[in-house]
Image (cartoon, rainbow, N blue to C red):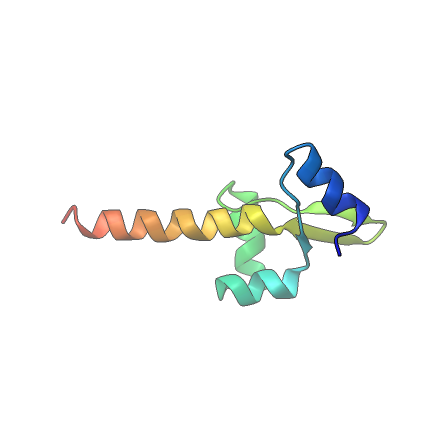
Amino acid sequence: MKNNNEQNSMKYGIAAKRLIRLPEVLNKTGFCKAWIYELIKSGGFPSQVKIGARAVAFIESEVDEWIESTIFDSRNNQNIK
């Protein structure tokens, strides 16, 4: 059974967003924490959102889109040689 937020998201055509913490981002990308923050600083990775006084998270769909885009760019650049 879906909760009210999921029902409202589907009712209004809004995609459900999932927040993930840094360890999951590190696992998905294979990068270390320092490199993720360097990429964020340079505008090369989706920035985090503040979820509490001392807590941040990333929007999973943005991270997934970044991964897909990186794969796509890598595969297309191999053909240009």
